[in-house]
Length: 78
Image 1 (cartoon, rainbow, N blue to C red):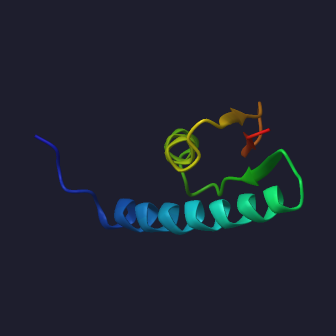
Image 2: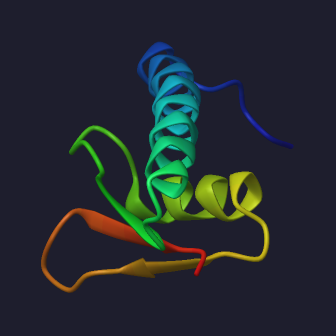
């Protein structure tokens, strides 16, 4: 049985939604200017694995690559 998330976990989920939304807008803007990738910095309050999963859903057919020892993810579409 899954327990109800705590208040801090619910706040984190809400912030992940807005983070993904802003990331999609910025990637679309970068693509319009001819870029083939975008790099985003994941805030320390968010889980890297959850953000990576959410970005994979938001960017199907794109490659999401993490960088070692940093909080950056690279979204490659070109």
